Image (cartoon, one colour):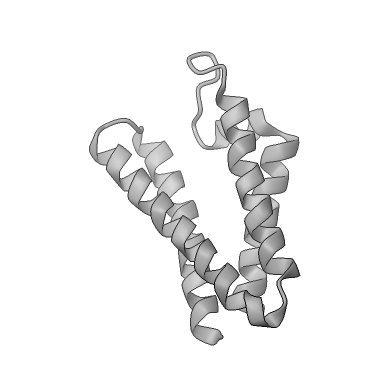
Length: 120
C-alpha cells in the first residue's frame, strides 16, 4: 500500500501532536527533556504539540486549492526547525541524542512536505 506524501505528513503531524498533548512528559523524555532541570518542559512540549496539531489539521481540512499554501507553511516551519536545531547544536546547547532526534524529526517532516509540494 502506497501512502501519498500529503497523507503521510498529516499522519506525522497529528500523531506527534496527539502523543505530546496527551502524554507531554513521556513525549518530552523521548526528546531528551530534563523535567527536573526544566519544570516548564511539559508546557513547552504541549506548545509544540499544539503547533503540530494545528498544522496537521490545516493540511487535513484544507480545500484542494488551499493545499499548496498549507504544504508550504508546513515546509517553512520544518525548515525553521532544522535551522534552529542545527544552530543550537552548533552552540553546544543540545546533547547529541537530543540533536539527532530533533534533526531526524524535522528532516522527516521537511522531506514529506517537499515531496508533497512537488506532487501538487
